[in-house]
Length: 354
Image (cartoon, rainbow, N blue to C red; front, top):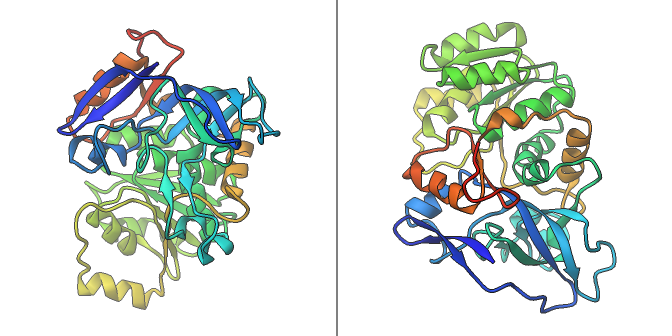
C-alpha cells in the first residue's frame, strides 16, 4: 500500500508499506479515502516536532470499513467512518468524569502513533465514528477539525443568541464561523489580517469582518459597541498578538475561547491584564474536541451540521490530490502555514489535483 511518510529534516515521500493486519478482536481495517493536513502537522514535518521519525501523519481522515475483528458488531464492511484520533486510557479519574481531553495517559493517532495518510489503517472500533448516509468522504475528513470549534462552544454553554467573533479566518475559524451561524448565534463576525480570507468569511456568512492589520483593537471594540453584550470570542489563530487582540475587542463579561495553539511565549501587558479584571472577562481554555459520552456531543453536532447542509467546504480546500500530488503540495509549504486546506485523496490518481 502507498503511504505518505515524513522523515527528519522535512522530507515528504510516498513509499510502499505492508498492508496492516487486524491483531485484536476490537479492531477494524479501514481503507482510507480522504485525509486533511492539519496546521498542527506543519511543525511535525518541518520543525522536528514529531514524537518520532519516520512517521506517517494524518488524524483528520475518513475511510471505508474493509474487515472487522470478531468482537465488532456495530460496523461492517462498506460502512464509511471518520477517525476519532484521541486515545484516552478510559481508566483514570479524568476519564471516569468523561474529561477525555484531560486524560493523563492518552495516545493520539497520527501524532504519537502512525496515522491515516496511507491507503489502509487498523484502528480500535472506539476510534471510528460511523458516518450517516449522505455525508461525503471529504466531509468525513472534516469532522475532526469542525469539532474543534464546537468543543469551545460547548465549554461556553453554546452560542445561541450570542454575538460570536472569530479571530483567525483559517480552516478552524471558518468552520467555527459557519457552525455558530447555524447554531443560532445572534451575529457572527470575523477578524483577520488577510483580505482574501475576510472576503471568504463574508461569503460563508459573516455579518461583519474586520482587518486587524488596518484597525486597532480599540477601533474594533468601538465598532462592536452595539453588540458589546453576550459576546463569545473564539481565538483560533494562535499567536500572542491575536490573544491580546481578543482581550482588547471584548465587551463586558465576554467569553473568550482560546483555541489556537501558541508556539511563542505570550507576555501580557499590565493594560491587557487590566482588561481581564475591569471587563470581568471569562477566559476558556479549549483543548481538542471531546465532551460527554464518548466521543462527545460535538461529533453528533457535526453530523447534524453536515447532513443539514450548513457547512460549505469547497472554498476551504486549496489542493485535493493523490499521494504524490499531496506530498509535493506539503513539501512546497516549506514550513509556512497553509493558505487553504491540503487534502490527500486516495480516490484520485497521483497526478490529479485541484
